[in-house]
Image (cartoon, rainbow, N blue to C red; front, top):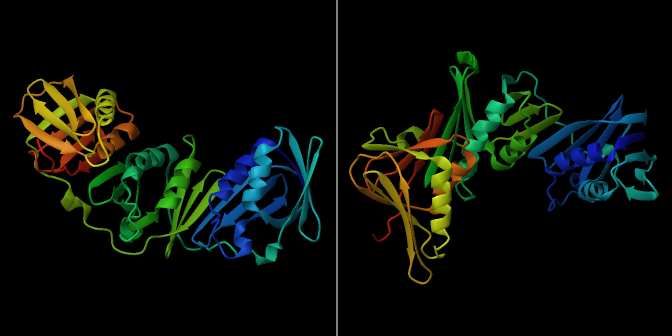
Length: 366
């Protein structure tokens, strides 16, 4: 096996593949990346058996072949090499020799026969949508995924392909983010609901390119995302996702439009005077303004006001500042709409697009 490849292409491909390697794996072969050189490309594959990444990069192949090499060690080396072409040659004993400039590096590998095969997706249900649309919807929801591993069905994003749209939902029990991708054509026989693991979500977001289509394939307990030159395969989260619709308030008493960045910056500054014991900010809605305050006896207090067109009743409600800022950071719209019922019911953030964020209030002193 022999090929020549640019340092940038090799490094990018390895960085993509390494994301699937579990450093705590007890199987040596799972610490390796599979390299397959043929034609004018190099295919790199890595897996932890639950999550697989396969990516293609351009290479000048002198001799076709396949081998496996230590993924993280190889990735670190290639990333640190000069930005020039790298010559790679692998002998029959899986010894790889890399030549870059004046440097020569030899790395021991393992035979490719030990590497697990890719899952089969014959007869899979297939969905095609714009990468930019999926990436935008994931960006609007991923931050609300639960980190509590005891609530495993919440450790991912719920996908629902139904009718003419894809609905994405993430929640950790204290907040919920929902976004939709429309203009799809999904026959009733292909409607599907499933939960994609957090690790896969983060890597899909990284792999998606705005100017491409993404193909989502579903087979048994697996999902595959074809993102241009990179394919990601993940086991699904098993279990039934909770009824998220009952969490979204259907009644609204007050609604106010706020400049997104102004609200984000004010909440961030005010929350700087929080303490670990009292991480909360209070929003006081009065006619013509929102007053944002925090008060931590052992730290200090902060207060800012935003002028808004608000004519409703006075409402004072407290939120976790990180949870309040999360959607404001990940949305791109200039304005958001804040919907309120009273000072003890969930607050809702919306935009002029299919997106809903529900945030439970905190019970703190006035």
